[in-house]
Length: 254
Image 1: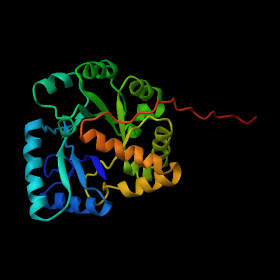
Image 2: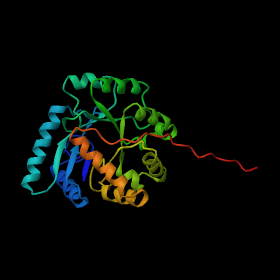
Image 3: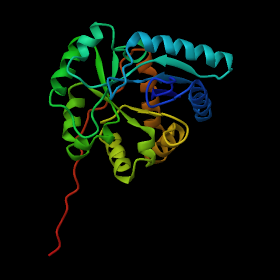
Image 4: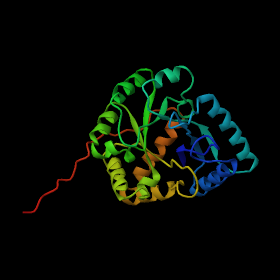
C-alpha cells in the first residue's frame, strides 16, 4: 500500500515532532500494510516554510535511519502546498516539490473556502505540465456546501485525494457521508492518510479500504490503490467522468 500524504518528517510542521515520533509512525504504517510513504510537510501554511531542498535532505536522513532501525518502509519526497497565486513561480524557482519529482502537486485549500483565482491558477499549472491534486476537499466548508465547485475543477483536469480517517468517520458523520459521495460521483482519485501522529491523527488506511471494499467492491479498492502507484511513477492515473453530487431535496410537511 502507498500513502501519498503523510506528515512523517520530524520537527518541520504539526506532524512528527521528533525522530522517535517518525519511527513510531513508520512502524504503525508497516502494521497497516503501507510500504511507501510520501512525506508531505506543509509549505506556506501558517508559519511553516518547507522548500524543496530542505525536504529532500530530511527525506534522505529519515530513510537512512529507517534502514538502520530495520523498518521496512520507504519515504519519498513531496510537499503539501497551501494554495497561493504564485505557485508556478515557486515551482520555477525550485521551492515547490511535486510528489516524488513527478508532475503531481498536492495543493491544500483554506478550510472554509476556495480562493476565486483557483480555476485560473490550475489552468496555468496544467499548461506547464503540472497536475494539481486537491487534498482533503471533503473537509472544506465551501466545497461541502457547494460541491459544484469541486466538480468544475475536476472536470477541467484537477485530481483530488480524500483522507482515510474521513472515510472512517473520524471527522464526523457529515464528512464521512460527503467523502462517500465524492467516491460515488468519481470526484476523487486517491485515498491517503494525512497522518500526523499515532494518537489522534493516525493512518486509518486499512480501515478505510476495508469499508470501501464492503461498500463498493474490490474493483474500487484496486482503482484507488493503482492510482497511487501510478502517481509516484509519474504516469497517467485512471479517471472516470466526474458527476455532480445531487442534493437531497427537503420536503416540508404541512
